Amino acid sequence: MTRPAPRPLPWLVATFLGLYGLFAGGHLYTGDAATVQATARSVLSGQGFAIDFDRAYGGAYGPDGKFYGQYGLGAVLSGLVPAAAGELLAGLLPGGPESTRLLRQLPAALWNIPFAAAAVGLVFACAGLLGMRPTTALAVACSAGVGTMLWPYAARDFTEPQVACFLLLAYHELLRLERSGREGCAVSAGAALGWALLTKVYVVVLAPLFVFEAWRRGGGRPLRTAVLFSTPLGVAAAAIAWYNLHRFGSPFVTGYASQVQNTHIPFWIGAFGLLLSAGKSVFLYNPPLLAAATGAPAFHRRAAGDSRFIWLLAAVHVAFFSIQQNWDGDWAWGPRYLLPAIPFTMLAAGALLESGARTLLWRLTLAAGLAVQFLGLAVDPNDWVRYLEAHKRELGDYLPGYPTKRYVPLHQHHWNPDLSPLRGHWFLLRSTLYPASAGSFVLHSSAEEWNDEKGHVLLPLVDLGPAGKHAGSLDFWFASLPRLMEPGQAAAPLSAMGIGCLALVCLGLPRLARSWRLLARAEATADAEART
Image 1: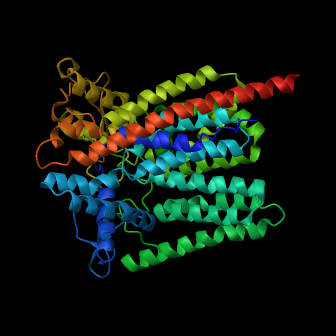
Image 2: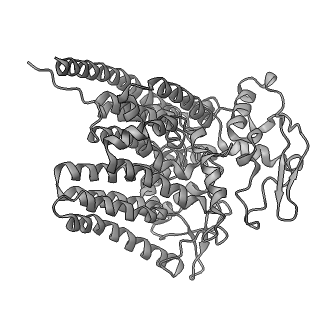
Image 3: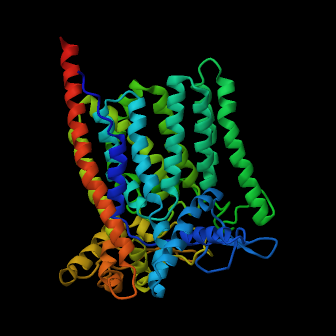
């Protein structure tokens, strides 16, 4: 009797659900998420999309005099679930003000975790549809899950993991369309891309690429397939137009600050920043991409059409965000706007692994990726920016007065290696774990000041002093447990979450390892039979 082949996908997703939950912060990080949650609560209470003005919220006043958030309709609709869950938790477990605030925020703070874990599963599924061996697909998926920015952003409240998940789902359905010829796959692919567009409107620049892929993979009826794909996409576009019209009186006004929206910078500034700068280079924050880039030629020989699609998708991301004033997506870890493209490009690493030529490179870059992502997880990225902001006098005008100056992206922590968040997070982590030996943060090169009046001015070497209040606690939910164990606080939900996540990892990891061993054995047997 033949033993059925192992199916690692469910355990892969379960393991990453648990892993991401274990290392989550358990709190909101940004005004973006606070704005989305305020809008979702307003919708749930029957008051529509308008919210009370708060300086922390991003948005604008509409023609009706009401304040509206600037974030996508998809983010708001998706946010209804954690908003309702947060209100339910706060009602079931009454406590002090801090406890109530934490309980209301907790579901929203964890909301990206299922999307990020699903993205890992989709990388595995897409690699399989591209003809990679199951063990290779597992290796690529795990590399994307722990070696890239997907891990830190699973624990943050930005919407990029959701966009990545839906873009991958659209691509997965297009791969199924090509292999099965089922027209329903074109509709589901268009629906997935449409939801990504509802979540972040920049996805519109990717739409032509996906529509072309639907046409190319449509077999004998390419035009019909492209129309089927585009129909749900058109519905999403109409919904966005209605949403904008309802809030701001025009289908083309999103509410983003006028100093950022439609305000562009020279392409070379953003492109250099996203690709090569000391503070935002996509390769520094995602070392396994070096393995993917090395495997790109072999991947192209194997699947030329998919290779062109993946690298074009990455190039469109870089080109679009390079000219945006807020290309850096700052108060965040690494080049967050590129995150949705990263799992796609990791697929090229599979060709490198299957060639067997440079598996050492993959191991080294994966180890480096683990270290980099741990730095991003253990320290709140906001703490490093606040530390630098507290030393404006020593650094000069490193943070221009947003949004009054055009070249907001020319912050020193993007360009000066001394001020890179990679070094900064290491300093704050040491200051938290070993405060007595961490010492001061000293610049080893001249700081560079930029402002509208003086241009570039070199500053002398300076000692910025110890971390002080900007360190002191790891940015993990379990670091808050001692404080939350006090009377009137909310330790129970976090403890239950931690137990559940640990159970998922303990159940999933051994089964995932067993699947790997069985698959590797089956592949070795097949190779031996092929040679005879």
